Image (tube, rainbow, N blue to C red; front, side, top):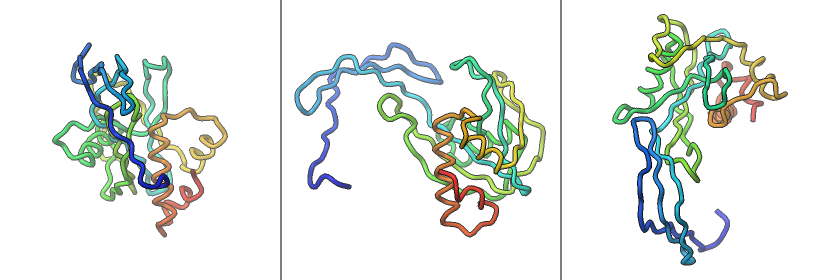
Length: 200
């Protein structure tokens, strides 16, 4: 990384208070001292569990998507199967469970794509991304009580074209998963991933 021997010193936490906490998130308000001596108070951090998300591709070149109302934006959104990583469950095990619960699909061929921060300035969690190849339906969906979902199978080339010309609005973190898959596809000779080599 450019910058020579320069390093960034972490902020010193002088005080932390929680305004709210439940199983889904916690709002932490820190008083922090920067390396230059400046004090910021409050600096809010949202603590959340890690997330998992998967690009599930069927044997005939379709991507498995779920449609769900998302109250934060007040809209119905079509997205990748995703969920919460409840530790100590391993991220891939969590994703396999989420894919089956949300869509009824499963796969015998999983590819770990990598992980990244959800939103490093304010969120403390990590997103773990996977590809599920030759995904196939094995059961009816069994979503959580608060989930009303519709499963879609869309030709991958059509889906990528719709993303490219702005006909689809997508979660930012799920675009990151697609970018990781495109990197994997460019390193792979797998013909099932040919459409992904030109994405991103």
